[in-house]
Image (tube, rainbow, N blue to C red; front, side, top):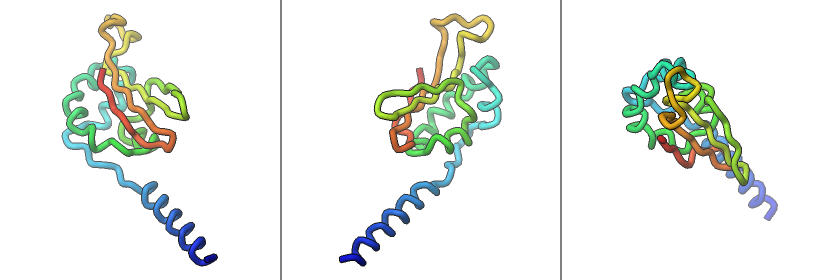
Length: 124
């Protein structure tokens, strides 16, 4: 019985290690550097890349916060939600940019579960 408990624990540790080592996806036709350089979307590079971002949404599902930051850079906003969930917000056009009204503001929001995995990606 004791051996069974030991093997069960080892199995869980190996499973968690495998899940944590998920490789970054290769995002097709997506320029990560220009996305990361366009803070708050003020240079319209993120807005120009939205179609390639949309095509790669499924590849980002299940990634961790760290992996998303490696791909997209530091988010423009982080919002905490109930039950230890979190949202990263990347502006495509922010009202803080010159000539952009609050009603013209657009963003990508990425929702993370309590176990640090992307569960939802919305483009507003």
